[in-house]
Amino acid sequence: MRIFLICGSLLLATIVNAQKKAGFKFVEKLSEKRIEVLYNGRLLTAFRFDDSIAKQVLYPVNTVDGITVTRGYPLEPRPGDRTDHPHHIGIWMNYESVNGLDFWNNSTAIPPDKRDHYGRILFTGVDKEEEKGSSAKLSVTAKWVRPGGELVLNEKTTYTFSVVNNDFFIDRATTLTADKDTAFFKDVKDGFFAIRVARELEQPSNETTEYIDAQGNKTSVPGTGNASSTGLYTSSNGLKGDAVWSTQGEWVMLQGVKDAKKITIGMLDHPGNVGYPAYWHARGYGLFAVNPLGRAVFSKGKDNLNLVLAPGQSANFRYTVIVSSGRDITSQDMNNWSKLFN
Image (cartoon, rainbow, N blue to C red; front, side, top):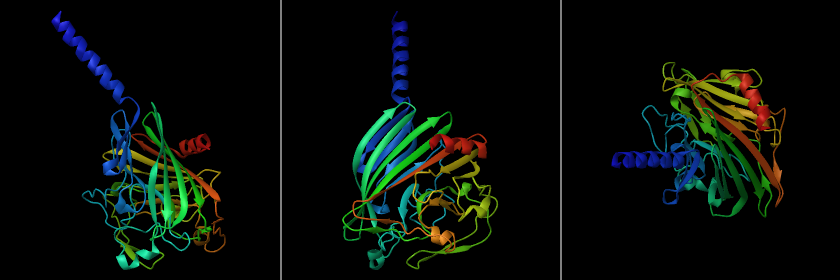
């Protein structure tokens, strides 16, 4: 009888533990300035609001089966990581020119005597956490501020996380509202919603390229070589590789191999967004971004936007990221998801 009681207790404990791990769960670690997003007890991502990164990010980003698709540097450097662009962290949203302030390029790498040109995005709180098995929602607020703390924009963002089979979906819906002054978004290159991927998912290249930001800071990015990098961009407009950069499309996907598994990172634009269909700021060295606000740059002056928000006026932005491993994702899959999420 005692043996049966012990076995029954172990079975009950196993069932209870499995139930605790089932589906999505948020774990607040506010002293570490993060909210972890777990699925079946495994970390998929974390909402991070470290003081040192001048914005909020999702970092790291993992597949359902535990493969990390984001670069580790600068938060958690890994062997082989590039050390360019320290402001490229996980998944984030910001912009290079809002009322003359550069929110995109801000990081601890900026010398103190130049920081008056850079804005910060300050996390202000959690509005809502909702966990429902294979999906979950996290609603947060933030303020885009000047170096002295003066408010430029109010932000409200809702992340919807979901898992279908072995695919992880991250949907970000953000509302930006101008405060008491007009907010002017100048058409520029660096923005707007982005992910910085792991070295293995970069596109192969032997060329060293130099990039210059709005403040004239130069960054040289050496080629990846052809051994360690396996990535390839494909756009809804049928273009591939480096040809995707500065073109418009409803979606773009980046495919490669990491940890011996096929990886796809897809990003969907949405028809309700400002500037739809957006231009893609997708670079071979691992920056995968969509920029709806830089039309004059990407069109070489043939088009322009220069978004203006009057005091109290808002603009809505929504993007969906798909992170998949272990299977072939086709353009038709991306088209189907685009229709589904729109």
